[in-house]
Image (cartoon, rainbow, N blue to C red; front, top):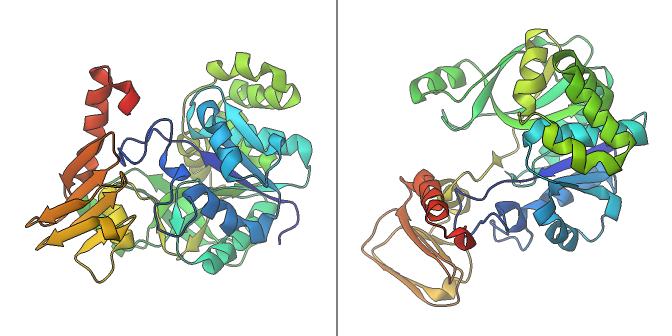
Length: 355
């Protein structure tokens, strides 16, 4: 347990890359995608409980608030903050910071997305504990994931020398955007870390850094915290920008960001290919759900039998079959990222009820 440590869980997402399991009204964090019996947001809460106990804030969309409350009944009504609309991570995490700044002057907060999977909870908690020590020393801290391959779907963190005041933390030289495969390979070789969007800091440090870049934005967030009744009026006026761009990148350029290396088996389940990799066992076909409903002959890939009916796959390699009853997806692991284009087409055709 860490005194005055608050876990902030941003819970958002459009649900496009894991359609039709994930939808706008039921994003992936509300689903059990690991077969553990716990949804992703429940697993995130479980992982943070030994560090924060009941000091948790979830920031989610208004449409998902009731589902979050149902899945996390241990949280009080004031611990689930509903955004009137999606304004990206700076507004969501910044609002949590403003609320905590007013609630607990000694607070240190950590922001951890609701839809990530971590396999080594003990190592994760060790990294967070180190990050909290650095945050108490005034740093904006990120946890940099140890790369397992030269991924092109993640941003990277370029670490620098060790910081003087915290054992286990390194300075951040820069954040870099998603690279090409060739550039990603050079990053991995040079010791860069994946940027998973995990940040630990004192609430006032985050808001003051934001204030240096956009004073009106920081003032608006603090104003909402002082008078929550203004949320509906002020929220639509806030910039739609990620925390990385609004604060982390300029702060790193000024030498004010530290990174704690984390090697705890992280995945953001960005598509069905990454889900298959995460769940793969000894069988050529990985099943998420009732394996008794799946029949295969000379096949490999991922099957999600979600409708209750039998799914049969014959003679197909690296296939993805997802059956939810009202929608059926058939693709390949290689083309899994393209699922989002189907969602866009359904919306253009007026089939919003399926997305």
